[in-house]
Image 1: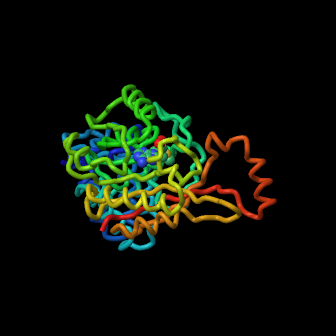
Image 2: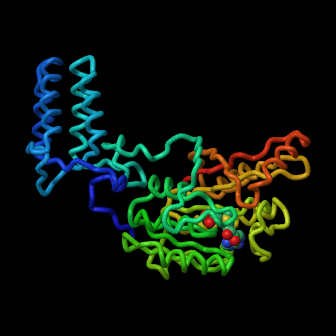
Length: 368
Ligand SMILES: C[S@@+](CC[C@H](N)C(=O)[O-])C[C@H]1O[C@@H](n2cnc3c(N)ncnc32)[C@H](O)[C@@H]1O
């Protein structure tokens, strides 16, 4: 079901210019460095290698069938590290690390991130505080749906926790942000959304968004609490998924529809959590073991009291057979609904003795 990329090169930063180096010539250059008998000699040899790299006519830049791709700035930074090493042993360690990059990839779990070339993935976030000031509005991505998440959220997790050709499921698909990102990244994606108008909207978006990798991106109208996920997958030729996004309503903060099945119309916080648990148990049956579920959710403030809905939901999902891998705090930019009322909220906060929400949570959970 999963289709691994045959490429051993990092899949992204496709726009960054790369050196296409001759594998045999580069291997020989590395051996030349490792052969140095003392630090001074190694540094002198390093100068030679750098001069050769700077010369576009050098055989290093004449790739054969097995070209090795390098971001110039990353390779030069690696060589800088060799040059500034204080001992021969340390310098040789850095050269050997470079050599390993030629041996072929060593993938991070559940992804095609090549750990031998980890410095090339500097756009992959690894900290637990995400301050994303501007949403990606490229292509068909739009900010006009109340409560949609920034495309950077699915982008980051799809890259880090799936491989090309794997399957992503989004049972609260909304305006299709996950489906669009998955398509761009060469992953299959299925979404479920309750509102027929949104489903049609997403289908229209998907019809205009290019399909660079011959993958499935489909949305179905339905109630995620009753949809038969196994059947949905089977109809698209899949038996399980490798990543799930749950971006439910934050209880009733935004009422998405009048439909009583809509989670934003749950009669109480308890009922909301019960429904989320019921959905999670069903989703878990199609999510592979040791694969990830991403829950994006915020808290609520009611009757003079802060309800940590995010933590309630996190605990509820953990109890469905998941272990917690990370809690990410992400800045919360105003939704269309709140824009313009910032002053009012500030006044209310001062008068009510509370703080205005400026963050939401992203919980990363792994299916046991
Ligand atoms: C927070 S939004 C998700 C937004 C989405 N991540 C995006 O980027 O557009 C939650 C969505 O869940 C949908 N929804 C609520 N209850 C549902 C249910 N029982 N089944 C399917 N969708 C539901 C709502 O209509 C809404 O579009």
